[in-house]
Image 1 (cartoon, rainbow, N blue to C red):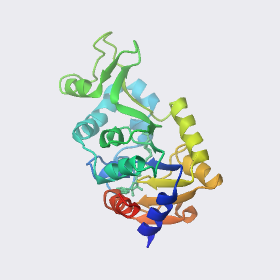
Image 2 (image 1 turned 180 degrees about the vertical axis):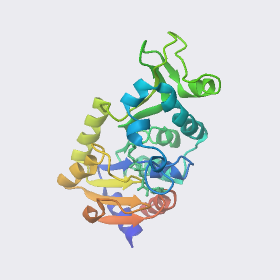
Image 3 (image 1 turned 180 degrees about the horizontal axis):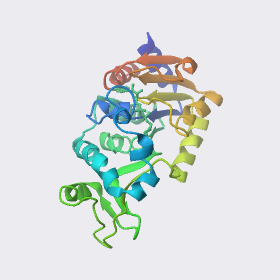
Image 4 (image 1 turned 90 degrees about the horizontal axis):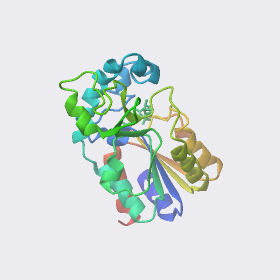
Length: 247
Ligand code: OAD
């Protein structure tokens, strides 16, 4: 039984590490990027999510981001998020490294969360540096496009997410790689594992001797490297794993 094997590995873990992607938040209503219904099946990411494109035309960026923000702001953690928080609370995971920017891991109770692609809950003015909660900027999008900085009036208001062409947050990425180096079990959930350097994190864990569990709705490029592959929804599979770890 693959779920049982995953639970066995996690129960024995001393330095378990999770890497999560958009699939974990799919059951909270936030569309993924790739795969069925993914955002990048409708839009070209290099166009709508690159820093060059944003700087050239912030309103084009915000027109796409507006819909995603509307959904993300009302989204609530699902059983997959809660299961990851339980695995941490029970000592089976040391941390969750996430490519997601929605803040749902923290909301579900995960304490050690490393956001390698930033956070969409805050918006920063690239001219004066002022920061505002996304919720406030989201409200202005109804009447103002692109939204303007309420301090300096600038038009380059950008969520604190990493766009294509931008560097990753260095402290977060270093911490993620150092946890991968120490990990004995690597649990990868809801990621297509095609975006680097995040996808390198499980490879580093494997190189340093970790066992790997992949929970994903569709095949991933790392399935052949994994000790356990579970094809399914994280909101269903992860609670089953937690139950078998004893709580
Ligand atoms: P993707 O959208 O590339 O992949 C999501 C994966 O989750 C797919 O393989 C789906 O099959 C799977 N999936 C969907 N629903 C699921 C569910 N309920 N349970 C389990 N798996 C499910 O998302 P990421 O790998 O996170 O980058 O994408 C990586 C990066 O690409 C994102 O962080 C973003 C994007 O461009 C930036 O914003 C910088």
